[in-house]
Length: 172
Image (cartoon, rainbow, N blue to C red):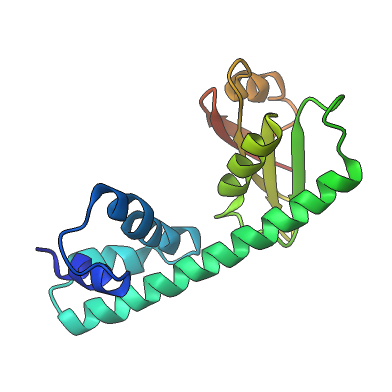
């Protein structure tokens, strides 16, 4: 088997052949977290290395990236929920669009998905950089196309795309 996957299995507490659930909920998120937290090469190197010690070192790095991703996700979710409690009326507001300069762009899609499911409204969560450029991720409900919404707003956004249920955009 793959040296890196063996190390990741060990770090995530799996001792025998991983199940589909273990791959989906333990291995996948850790490989994915590296890219979300700006270090995709750690995951690539883990999958390519044949050095067991280096693999273990990288597996622990991915574990740390995943913890950081979870903390960032929880921070954004809490702040977004606070904003919604202040300014959101589920009865009259048809969409959720929130942004902050302190939110990590690699995690906004996860939070958009959580809030869309919780409130059953199309949701965009946007990370704003120091130049006022927002990178956002949207998740939708059946019957509301995010691609159509983005095309309808093409003159007010920098770029955007995706599909009906999930999309990204860049906005000033």
